[in-house]
Amino acid sequence: MTDTAAPGLREQKRIATKRALQVALLRLSMDRGFDNVTVEEVAQEAGVSPRTFFNYFASKEEAVAAPHGPHELTPEEIARYEDGAGDPLSDFIVVMAARAAGEEDFELHSLRRELMHRESRLLGDKAGLMQRIQQQVVGMIAERLRADELRAGRMPDETALQDRAAFIAVLCMTIARHGWSRWVASEGAGTLGECMLGALDEFHEIAAATR
Image 1 (tube, helix red, strand yellow):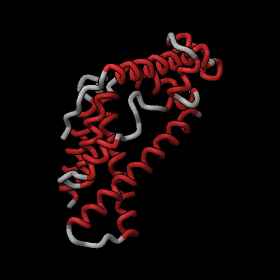
Image 2 (image 1 turned 120 degrees about the horizontal axis):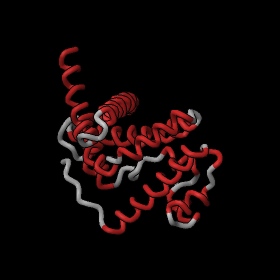
Image 3 (image 1 turned 180 degrees about the vertical axis):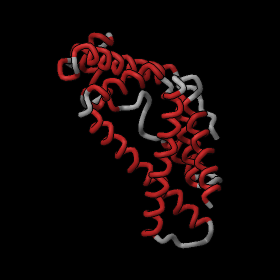
């Protein structure tokens, strides 16, 4: 379930270019302040054209907030989740842990965190991105819950289904965030995916003890 194919050369180049732009922006902003850095300077530092910058990001703010890898789930990831055999929460964390291989860039995380600490207004852009991601997660989970109900021979109660999907999404994002915090605390010693799965195990232990 957690196995993923290595990205092709074209995708590797895209990831490398995106990272170079983000690192350039973060480093220049740390030196001179976010508002004092232009897109042209970022592109020059990364060795690409300003047009290339806008192929990846709509703005400097988005470049700071965006994850290193793609933040939209792929159709393959969505299909794998909707066909999962486990519980909807655990299966989603497994999907997130599998795709975390593209996010294990401790330098990038550290630079982003330090800049946001210095310039707290950028946290609003990060929060906006996370809200959009959470909306996608709610939609995915709702589809999974609907499919589970139909497979069990029951007609879904749409109101209850949406409420449950929203609740599961909040729990998923919290568990993923806890795993990320554990990875940061370890200074990247382990893998981000392992830390997320560890956070899931911890959640299950707490839930079992609570019951």
